[in-house]
Amino acid sequence: QKEVEQDPGPLSVPEGAIVSLNCTYSNSAFQYFMWYRQYSRKGPELLMYTYSSGNKEDGRFTAQVDKSSKYISLFIRDSQPSDSATYLCAMREYGNKLVFGAGTILRVKS
Amino acid sequence: DAGITQSPRYKITETGRQVTLMCHQTWSHSYMFWYRQDLGHGLRLIYYSAAADITDKGEVPDGYVVSRSKTENFPLTLESATRSQTSVYFCASIDPGGNTEAFFGQGTRLTVV
Image (cartoon, rainbow over all chains, first blue to last red; front, side, top):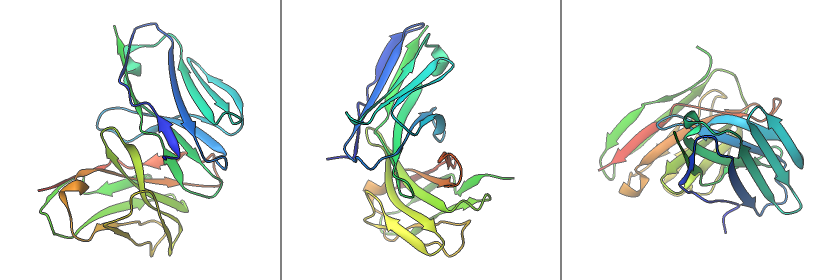
Protein backbone atom coordinates (compact mmCIF):
# COMPACT_ATOMS: atom_id res chain seq x y z
CA GLN A 1 0.00 0.00 0.00
CA LYS A 2 1.29 3.44 -0.91
CA GLU A 3 1.84 5.88 1.93
CA VAL A 4 -0.03 8.61 0.03
CA GLU A 5 -2.98 8.02 -2.30
CA GLN A 6 -4.21 10.60 -4.79
CA ASP A 7 -6.61 10.22 -7.70
CA PRO A 8 -4.68 11.13 -10.88
CA GLY A 9 -7.77 12.40 -12.72
CA PRO A 10 -7.87 14.14 -15.11
CA LEU A 11 -10.39 16.51 -13.61
CA SER A 12 -12.09 18.85 -16.06
CA VAL A 13 -14.18 21.81 -14.81
CA PRO A 14 -15.65 24.99 -16.33
CA GLU A 15 -14.12 28.36 -15.52
CA GLY A 16 -15.45 29.74 -12.24
CA ALA A 17 -16.13 26.35 -10.68
CA ILE A 18 -14.99 25.30 -7.22
CA VAL A 19 -12.39 22.57 -7.42
CA SER A 20 -11.78 19.99 -4.71
CA LEU A 21 -8.58 17.92 -4.72
CA ASN A 22 -7.94 15.24 -2.12
CA CYS A 23 -5.32 12.88 -0.73
CA THR A 24 -5.38 10.17 1.88
CA TYR A 25 -2.39 8.82 3.76
CA SER A 26 -1.51 5.92 6.00
CA ASN A 27 1.54 7.15 7.95
CA SER A 28 0.35 8.79 11.17
CA ALA A 29 3.84 10.24 11.70
CA PHE A 30 3.38 12.76 8.89
CA GLN A 31 3.42 16.25 10.39
CA TYR A 32 3.83 18.59 7.43
CA PHE A 33 1.31 18.71 4.61
CA MET A 34 1.87 20.51 1.35
CA TRP A 35 0.31 21.10 -2.04
CA TYR A 36 2.52 21.63 -5.05
CA ARG A 37 1.51 22.85 -8.49
CA GLN A 38 3.35 21.67 -11.57
CA TYR A 39 3.00 23.09 -15.04
CA SER A 40 3.92 21.04 -18.06
CA ARG A 41 7.69 20.44 -18.40
CA LYS A 42 8.44 22.38 -15.20
CA GLY A 43 9.46 21.39 -11.69
CA PRO A 44 6.83 21.44 -8.91
CA GLU A 45 6.34 24.67 -6.97
CA LEU A 46 4.96 24.99 -3.45
CA LEU A 47 1.40 26.27 -3.36
CA MET A 48 0.24 25.72 0.21
CA TYR A 49 1.79 24.40 3.41
CA THR A 50 0.15 23.40 6.68
CA TYR A 51 1.51 21.93 9.88
CA SER A 52 -1.58 21.07 11.89
CA SER A 53 -5.17 19.99 11.42
CA GLY A 54 -7.60 22.67 10.29
CA ASN A 55 -7.93 25.09 7.41
CA LYS A 56 -5.49 27.52 5.87
CA GLU A 57 -6.57 30.08 3.31
CA ASP A 58 -4.50 31.98 0.74
CA GLY A 59 -6.49 33.96 -1.79
CA ARG A 60 -8.59 31.57 -3.87
CA PHE A 61 -6.91 28.52 -2.31
CA THR A 62 -7.85 26.72 0.91
CA ALA A 63 -5.92 23.78 2.32
CA GLN A 64 -7.62 21.49 4.79
CA VAL A 65 -6.04 18.81 6.97
CA ASP A 66 -7.91 16.20 9.00
CA LYS A 67 -5.31 14.15 10.86
CA SER A 68 -7.91 11.97 12.57
CA SER A 69 -9.14 10.76 9.17
CA LYS A 70 -5.69 10.98 7.52
CA TYR A 71 -7.21 13.11 4.79
CA ILE A 72 -6.12 16.39 3.21
CA SER A 73 -7.86 18.60 0.67
CA LEU A 74 -7.17 21.59 -1.52
CA PHE A 75 -10.05 23.81 -2.62
CA ILE A 76 -9.76 26.28 -5.48
CA ARG A 77 -12.50 28.91 -5.72
CA ASP A 78 -13.39 30.74 -8.92
CA SER A 79 -11.11 28.49 -10.94
CA GLN A 80 -9.30 30.04 -13.91
CA PRO A 81 -7.80 28.52 -17.08
CA SER A 82 -4.39 29.48 -15.66
CA ASP A 83 -5.04 27.03 -12.80
CA SER A 84 -4.78 24.17 -15.31
CA ALA A 85 -1.84 22.12 -14.05
CA THR A 86 -0.98 19.00 -12.11
CA TYR A 87 -1.54 19.31 -8.35
CA LEU A 88 0.54 17.10 -6.09
CA CYS A 89 0.00 16.58 -2.41
CA ALA A 90 3.13 15.99 -0.33
CA MET A 91 3.77 14.98 3.25
CA ARG A 92 6.73 14.78 5.54
CA GLU A 93 7.76 13.47 8.93
CA TYR A 94 9.97 15.79 10.92
CA GLY A 95 13.56 15.31 9.79
CA ASN A 96 12.66 12.69 7.22
CA LYS A 97 11.77 12.01 3.62
CA LEU A 98 9.23 14.00 1.61
CA VAL A 99 6.59 11.77 0.01
CA PHE A 100 4.31 12.78 -2.85
CA GLY A 101 0.97 11.60 -4.14
CA ALA A 102 0.49 10.62 -7.78
CA GLY A 103 -0.75 14.11 -8.72
CA THR A 104 -4.14 15.17 -10.12
CA ILE A 105 -4.30 16.69 -13.58
CA LEU A 106 -6.70 19.65 -13.54
CA ARG A 107 -8.11 21.26 -16.67
CA VAL A 108 -10.17 24.45 -16.36
CA LYS A 109 -12.11 25.17 -19.52
CA SER A 110 -12.91 28.77 -20.55
CA ASP B 1 23.02 32.37 -9.43
CA ALA B 2 21.46 31.00 -6.27
CA GLY B 3 19.29 27.95 -6.67
CA ILE B 4 19.31 24.29 -7.53
CA THR B 5 20.49 23.18 -10.94
CA GLN B 6 20.44 19.83 -12.69
CA SER B 7 22.56 18.67 -15.59
CA PRO B 8 22.15 17.57 -18.23
CA ARG B 9 18.59 18.73 -19.04
CA TYR B 10 18.20 16.02 -21.68
CA LYS B 11 20.05 12.74 -22.09
CA ILE B 12 19.72 9.79 -24.43
CA THR B 13 21.70 6.70 -23.52
CA GLU B 14 21.85 3.05 -24.51
CA THR B 15 20.76 0.08 -22.45
CA GLY B 16 23.57 -1.16 -20.23
CA ARG B 17 25.51 2.09 -20.09
CA GLN B 18 26.32 3.92 -16.89
CA VAL B 19 24.99 7.45 -16.67
CA THR B 20 25.26 10.10 -13.96
CA LEU B 21 22.79 12.90 -13.37
CA MET B 22 24.14 15.90 -11.52
CA CYS B 23 22.45 18.10 -8.94
CA HIS B 24 23.97 21.21 -7.39
CA GLN B 25 22.45 23.62 -4.86
CA THR B 26 23.87 26.91 -3.65
CA TRP B 27 21.96 27.34 -0.38
CA SER B 28 23.78 24.67 1.71
CA HIS B 29 20.46 22.98 2.45
CA SER B 30 21.07 19.84 4.46
CA TYR B 31 18.37 17.66 2.89
CA MET B 32 18.46 16.64 -0.76
CA PHE B 33 16.20 14.27 -2.70
CA TRP B 34 16.05 12.48 -6.02
CA TYR B 35 12.66 11.68 -7.59
CA ARG B 36 11.55 10.17 -10.82
CA GLN B 37 8.28 11.21 -12.42
CA ASP B 38 6.30 8.91 -14.67
CA LEU B 39 2.75 9.31 -15.93
CA GLY B 40 0.26 8.07 -13.35
CA HIS B 41 2.87 7.68 -10.61
CA GLY B 42 3.60 11.23 -9.57
CA LEU B 43 6.97 11.81 -7.95
CA ARG B 44 8.51 8.65 -6.58
CA LEU B 45 11.42 8.98 -4.20
CA ILE B 46 14.60 7.20 -5.28
CA TYR B 47 17.11 8.29 -2.63
CA TYR B 48 17.49 11.09 -0.16
CA SER B 49 20.25 12.53 1.97
CA ALA B 50 20.07 14.27 5.34
CA ALA B 51 23.64 15.62 5.17
CA ALA B 52 27.00 14.97 3.57
CA ASP B 53 27.89 11.28 3.73
CA ILE B 54 24.36 10.32 4.92
CA THR B 55 22.05 8.76 2.36
CA ASP B 56 18.97 6.57 2.55
CA LYS B 57 16.75 4.63 0.18
CA GLY B 58 13.37 5.82 -0.93
CA GLU B 59 10.53 3.96 -2.62
CA VAL B 60 12.31 2.92 -5.85
CA PRO B 61 16.10 2.66 -5.24
CA ASP B 62 16.92 -0.43 -7.29
CA GLY B 63 19.37 0.22 -10.14
CA TYR B 64 20.47 3.59 -8.74
CA VAL B 65 23.44 4.73 -6.69
CA VAL B 66 23.97 8.07 -4.94
CA SER B 67 26.79 9.77 -3.11
CA ARG B 68 27.11 12.99 -1.18
CA SER B 69 30.68 13.90 -0.42
CA LYS B 70 29.84 17.64 -0.37
CA THR B 71 26.71 19.31 0.96
CA GLU B 72 26.00 21.12 -2.30
CA ASN B 73 26.21 18.14 -4.66
CA PHE B 74 24.05 15.04 -4.88
CA PRO B 75 24.76 13.01 -8.05
CA LEU B 76 22.53 10.10 -9.10
CA THR B 77 24.11 7.24 -11.05
CA LEU B 78 22.34 4.59 -13.07
CA GLU B 79 24.84 1.75 -12.96
CA SER B 80 23.51 -0.13 -16.00
CA ALA B 81 20.65 1.76 -17.61
CA THR B 82 17.45 -0.08 -18.54
CA ARG B 83 14.49 1.06 -20.65
CA SER B 84 12.31 1.10 -17.52
CA GLN B 85 14.51 3.92 -16.22
CA THR B 86 13.35 6.21 -19.00
CA SER B 87 11.78 9.03 -17.00
CA VAL B 88 12.02 12.63 -15.89
CA TYR B 89 14.29 12.98 -12.87
CA PHE B 90 13.96 15.79 -10.37
CA CYS B 91 16.37 16.81 -7.67
CA ALA B 92 15.13 18.82 -4.67
CA SER B 93 16.51 20.33 -1.50
CA ILE B 94 15.01 21.40 1.84
CA ASP B 95 16.35 23.63 4.53
CA PRO B 96 14.87 22.01 7.66
CA GLY B 97 15.31 25.23 9.56
CA GLY B 98 12.84 26.91 7.23
CA ASN B 99 9.22 26.04 6.48
CA THR B 100 10.08 22.66 4.90
CA GLU B 101 9.46 23.99 1.39
CA ALA B 102 11.25 21.80 -1.13
CA PHE B 103 12.96 23.59 -3.99
CA PHE B 104 13.17 21.67 -7.23
CA GLY B 105 15.60 21.68 -10.11
CA GLN B 106 14.38 21.98 -13.70
CA GLY B 107 14.45 18.22 -14.22
CA THR B 108 16.47 15.87 -16.42
CA ARG B 109 14.61 14.03 -19.17
CA LEU B 110 16.39 10.69 -19.61
CA THR B 111 15.66 8.30 -22.46
CA VAL B 112 17.18 4.82 -22.48
CA VAL B 113 17.13 3.17 -25.90
